[in-house]
Image: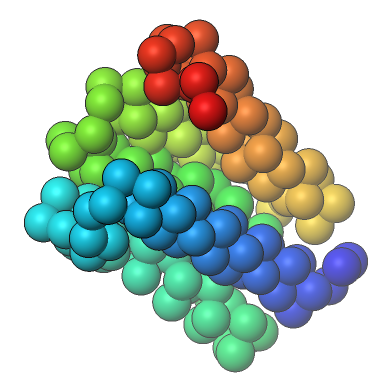
Length: 159
């Protein structure tokens, strides 16, 4: 995992697994509520998130396929992915509860902050530091959001 292909593959695979897990959770909830899975609200959320997630996926694929590409280096991917993921959450937030928009803005600000740090540090991020940033940003922020939901969605936590 100390080379760009390993870094990109690990985090693309992690994102794919998270997406598959989300799909299964939403599907289970729809079955439990006797609702159709691909309802109009679900379709709107999916369409809102599609463009930023597609752009981030393509950036990862191009960085993997073209190692000498000077447009976006693998060490710049974490900030780029954070900003795009934040945009996806923010647009989905127009169809969901207020907290998801806030989480989207936090991702956007973290990504922009990371770009500023890289700009003023004058050098690229090491892949070890990039792994740490990805784990802290994506793992930590989602964990914090899960805790936020647990305490703000009291009536829905009774299974």
